Length: 276
Image 1: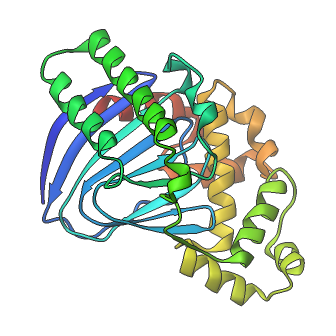
Image 2: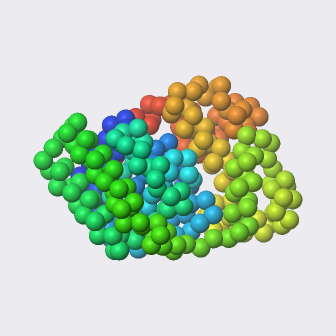
Image 3: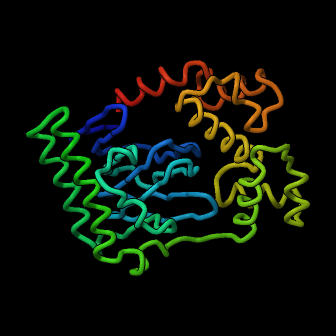
């Protein structure tokens, strides 16, 4: 596998990188979420993107918008791909432009909106000439411009986000899970609400979301807990808010899912961003 990094930037509010991978085995990211917004622009290659109950087949020259807290996963379908990834805190923008972006806008076919592709090309160009605060200001301005392009060209009404499949039972299941994440929630309760068997529920989740319903619930609870810890809460104070009966169970689940204990979340988050 050959990994080429063309440009990058990171600090506490903004992570940006442009890289390509050659001769890589097809791989899948675990379902996860971020405390920030994410823009993922696929310049070349093919991926599958799953968010909530929707499954998207993403082709080259497409942009994915992921909002904070949304559990999602990516499967890289091709061995070669070229992509830009930007994660940013909403507070870094100089306007409230994000409030004008439709909540159901997820995947944009930039072949219909070449102005967006040009923005990412500019990121590479400016990376070669500026660093530190100057580069951050430029990148945030370009990110903001992407959203103004979406508004100006009425991307949402152009049907750019219609290329997905969805299962109504999965949609209802996720809605019920979201409403009861802070409560005692069992698969029996979920199946009773949906009027289906546990085996069929498992089949649906693994087919559409690539994860079992039990792991999905646990992942979402842990992802929400992770965001709360990153915002400064003490792990021992918040575990019960996310359906864990005791701290030992939460600790073991957190360490197994993320690979490190909740007490190391802040230091790990900083170190990972510094390597992006």
